[in-house]
Length: 114
Image 1 (cartoon, rainbow, N blue to C red):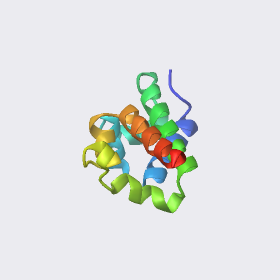
Image 2: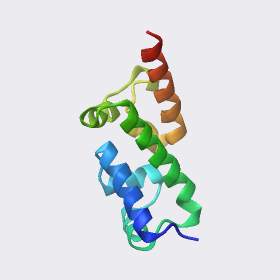
Image 3: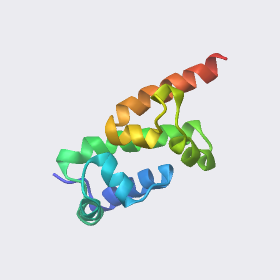
Image 4: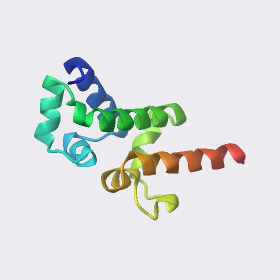
């Protein structure tokens, strides 16, 4: 089963827009080819990848709620001590959304606790 074509296109566009990344970077994060993202935009996201795209979309929405839009692209490209000197984008590519979600939780908990 596929997510509807317009929904797949919206999700891919929202994720890329939030993080300020192109198709190649997004494909690397999702471990697919850039041409595959194009297919997903035209035909819909296959069921086998829906959970991955949903998790990434949820993470991008958390970033939009936590930070001003103009800051997100800087944040995801700046190495973080809590990420062992790696950027959010690097961690997304190697460790996936859960590792970044955990980092974001720790980061926001620190800010709120102060």
